[in-house]
Image (cartoon, rainbow, N blue to C red; front, side):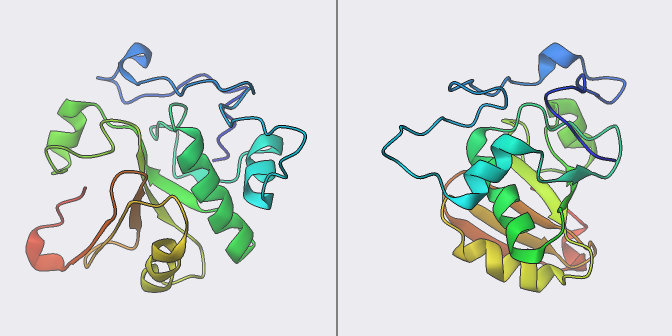
Length: 170
């Protein structure tokens, strides 16, 4: 499902209210991406985010409207690199939903600063390796039992949990 933050109202799981999700700070443009001064040239990913949404969601229960500009730029860079939009499997989560899915207690999903993504035709290990090299990326994690990669814009850290970790997600 294509997620268009400018036109689509927020969609939440039944126990989440739209006001539960934090709002992205608007820095002068409709989607929250900071406008550049006339002397600065925005990189291609920042221009991409301004013109269209550079990702899809795995379903209408995935909440992405509150993604900060920094995370949108990371997703646009993934789209630019692989030539296809990444699919967001999980974005914002309420604390109760995060507990239900086994997320970390201080998950960046609760702050709407994280996404679990996959790119069709790209291995999760190749995607994780690329994300570790992207400016602005904080956490990058893979999970043995799942085909997605966690990416967030928090502090720098990486992890690779196998299936023995009971599928815990960040």
